[in-house]
Every structure is written in C-alpha cells, then in structure tokens.
Image (tube, rainbow, N blue to C red; front, top):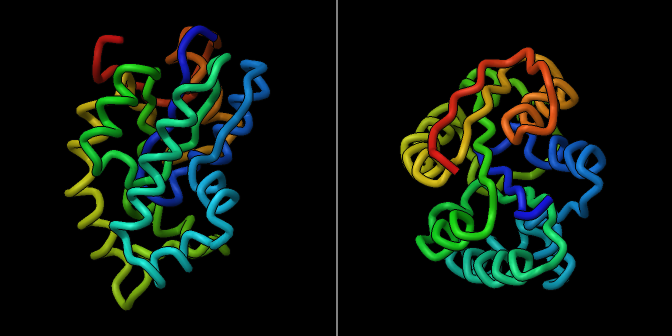
Length: 185
C-alpha cells in the first residue's frame, strides 16, 4: 500500500468495522481516529463534547489526523463522521490518502444506531431522523468533494462492504454492491 486509505461517512455506516477488516486484508495498520483521540486525551468523545464543545473536539481531531497521515508505512484510517467539516482535513485527506466514502440510506443508518451501544453526541435528542438528515445535508457534499470512490453499504455485512472497498481500491474482486466512482484518484 503506497498511500493511506481513509474511510469517511455518516455515523453508523460501519467505518470502524470495515477498517479493521480492510487492515487485515491489506496487511496494514488500522487507526481509528476517534479512538486515537480518546487514547491521547484520556476522555471519551462524549465527555470532550460535553466539557469543551464540538470546536475543541474538532481541534483535537485535526491534530490527530495530521499525526496519522504523517505515518509510514501507509495505514487504513477510520475517520470520524465530521472530519470533513474542516477544510484543512479535507485537503490533507485528498493529498495523502485514497478516500472511500461509505454511504447508506438514512433508514439503514437509523436501524444500525438503534442496535448499537455507541454513544454519538451529535445524534442525541428527540428526533434522530431529523438530526441524521441535517448531517447528511451538511456533510454529504463534503464527502463527495474528497472521495475517490463511494461504496453503498445499505445491505450485507462488514465483510461484504470490505470486499466492495477492496474492489474499488483495485485489490479485490466481486463486490455484491453498487460502487460509484466519484473522483479520479
């Protein structure tokens, strides 16, 4: 692997699960950006948001992304859903990684969130469907801007999604998924 591979997408799309499998398939280190922030800071993402707000979390995220993208050899990076909000992060990802946007319908994401025990600070509240729609409207164009490819992951499991990503990267065969190329690498 000569370039980092970065997975981006909305909450509950499966970035972390696919990244772990992708790392095994590519024999590459896997870095979960949120987990690295938690490890360095000593607080959960939820606690950082509660104590210091989103802006402080985004600053930690920017610094950690810079550290990760400076690593050699190349790694597989599971990015937090909001990493694309920062123009510097988008530029760094575009310059140093093959970016794959994992996408799924809002219905699929909401169903996954209901089953998950993961705390997602930006999804907390009375109307998760409305919050998710707002996140998609805000982030979708940014994912599209930097994505080398988009992989639809509505159906199937993480193994199927991983095969689709490998196919997009040119290292696997047969996807079982719709794959849209969104940017020339």
